Image (cartoon, rainbow, N blue to C red; front, side, top):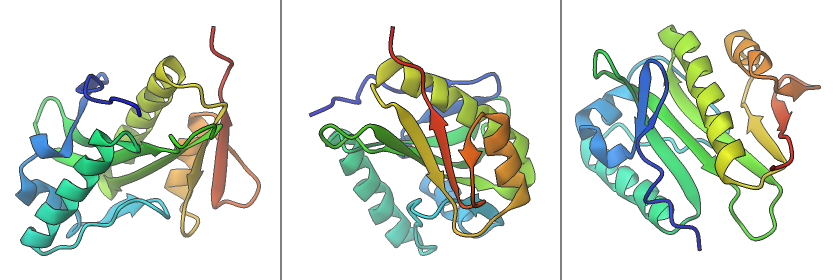
Length: 167
């Protein structure tokens, strides 16, 4: 079993990625009541505050059990919560990691910065040969962000990044 305890916080130039329990529940709840981008399998938390608390606890159990890494994304300068990003696929011998996210729509360039950092993090810490992102419906802004980060697609819904072999 993986121990992910040491994998927080993770920093980018403008964002802090930390456990969801470090973000006020009200901010997590507010994310789902504003326009956001999300992937097919990203955890969608309900918009009732008590259900959001249960959802955050469920996610953190998965992190502590080593089955997924999930971080809340906060703007480091304003301390405003911007989204959630998850890496999963840690089952035995799985070669493809899955990247899921939910992120505020108006700040899609911030999502690019976060994805770039998470890809680097995955390359540094895990032995995946690929990272995959699956979106529900094609969204030009998401396609552009994934393309900027070297993900390839054939159908505008499934994206894959080949990771270099570990040194």
